[in-house]
Amino acid sequence: MSNVKQDNELSRLKIKIRGLSAKTVANGCTEAEAFSAMEKVGELLEQYNLTLTDCMLKAESCIEKRYWSGKKRRGPMDTTMVALSEFTDTKMYCCRKYADVYPYTVSDLGYNWFGLESDVDMAIYLAGVIQKAIWGEYRKWRKTPEYKNRPAHTRQVVALNFQIGMAHRLNDRLRDMKEELIKQQDTADSDKRRHMDNQCTDLMVTHKMKTDKVDSEWDEIKPKLHKAARSRHRVDYAARTAGAKAADKVNLSRPIEGGRKGELS
Image (tube, rainbow, N blue to C red; front, side, top):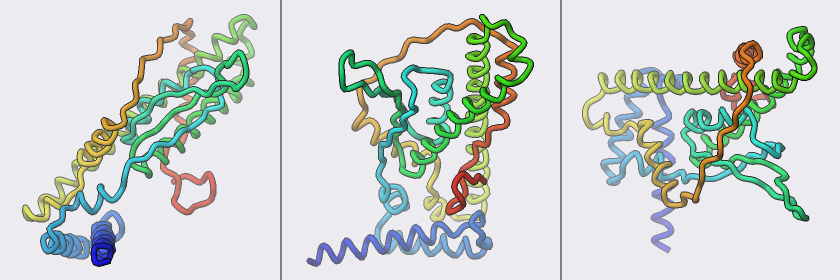
């Protein structure tokens, strides 16, 4: 019984430390309030012989969720999935659902996401946004003279190139956004270090600490994977350019927490 009581007290302590760690300037606190909270965190960690990793990262285990695309074959959307996994600090691999009756053909193509729950949810949300955007923008473009004036026998190739151009641009945007996020975090970490002593610097949870945790848990369950064959297509540069322009309209921001369904920040 005493062990249970001790575990409950430790859990409450970790919750308190996570609450104090959330008091940052970015979350609306003054620099004095943020620094005071960080000092208190340091005192509690030293008093109970804990690390911030124990309280922040070990408290959250990695999970795995699946996103079914409703497609039977791979397509332009697949181009963006690796960049999306890098952007959200998750691991991703493709999977298939087969029909229950002969000839047991593929009935759905899916993507498995592995990582911290908030990151996995973000990856699945953006996968849905990207899929809907590619199809939605293609349907709009199909009504334009640029598409209608093409010879009928070339329209299938043109349609595919529009979607490929859009996927390539979204892929580039995700990688650019990730680079910008890392730069912002590095700048924020540098600013914190200038205002902290060595003890407080040890209290910072860095991007590397999170990715190391995901990598460690992924290595424990890593499934056997194989590379899919690359597809070759006829290139139509005008259609790809039109697709790339359409990709710039897609909102890849995180949805507002607690906001109306479909509302973006």
